[in-house]
Image 1 (cartoon, rainbow, N blue to C red):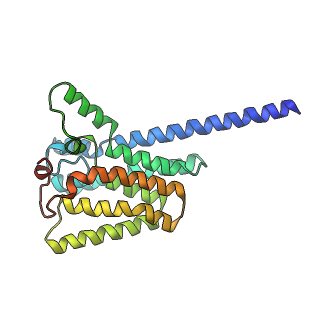
Image 2 (image 1 turned 90 degrees about the vertical axis):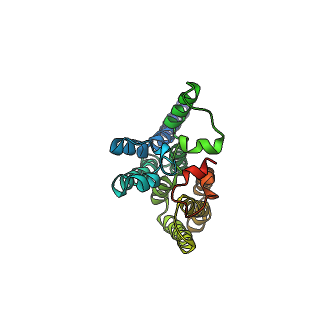
Image 3 (image 1 turned 30 degrees about the horizontal axis):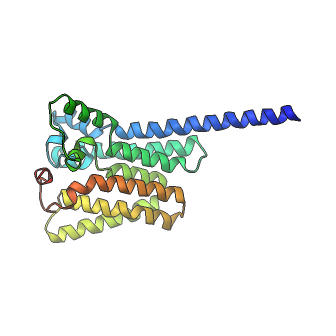
Length: 246
């Protein structure tokens, strides 16, 4: 009897240890995948340009689209969306833990917004004296993208109804700006913020799962912080970077 109890305990410990290892691997892997600055790489390979120095200054898909065209811009947006979609799909297929897919989603979007590679590059250039340190709102474009495409990929994997509902809201805000005169970085930032901030409520409406809502809240906080430098800009301004730095 006692040996059977001991064997059962050992087996449970091994399962628990394996699940912990899988969870840690997926979580850190999601953040690392999200950290890959695809837009920066594409812009450099396509035209030897640094997105942080042109357009809105944001190293993301929308700035790539505006500055380099539909080809590289579309590719950048697709890859950024894949950074959110792939980790969530992997978490769903590799583990039965309910909270891991939402955790992978939050880690992937956080990696896109605060890329490990771009943070290390930012610190390296500042400590080396090649560039001055900046206030947090001016440093945001140097640390990662704004997270819209990655959030779309996340919602595509987590909840298609939520994604479609958020995209409708995004489109409505853009239409309001079109009536006001034009679309610029501020218009996209406001539409993105409205859509992403609505996602926790939309997820609760469609699924009523606490882990999904918590992950969406974290994503909403991170992406809203990234959008702050652009929210107050003139919505018709074609090049928001100069205004963002004033």
